[in-house]
Length: 174
Ligand code: ADP
Image (cartoon, protein in one colour):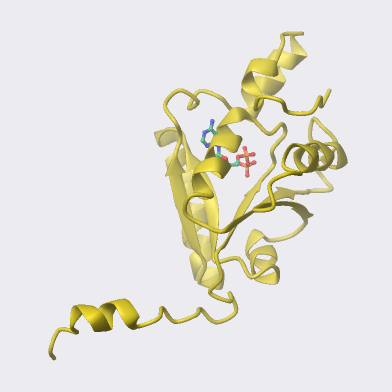
């Protein structure tokens, strides 16, 4: 078969993906307990690629976490209130079901090191098999790769100031 001419290549629209609307919403699911500078960096970079990022706090009633989910949501909504490209939601159940309910084009996850790799790979595989949804992985900014919510929780537990690990200007959470 002949190769399409370049004009054809440029004018052929990408097919919309069934059930996902073909939109440009990227779902960023996580515990965000707490939301850190590492997470905020991913959101900022993802906004250069997608029109909208939905930050979704996954709620597991069996695991209430460190900061109450309502408080995580309140702080995130306050922080992003002036950016119309970012929405903050919560969800229970499977991430792929929530992704379908909001018509997300893909799921955003971050990779800090090889330690994250196997987990993120298996989640991405399962989600693609379950719902034909892709996972967009952004590598951590090297300066922020050491930041994790669990390290921040541990520092707070020992009375250390956690402000340097939170996005600048982030509302007080504890
Ligand atoms: P979960 O509990 O679902 O792993 P987290 O809130 O811990 O959720 O993290 C959400 C996503 O953000 C994960 O993909 C994680 O790898 C990524 N992430 C966490 N910290 C950083 C960081 N410092 N830089 C880049 N990505 C990060």
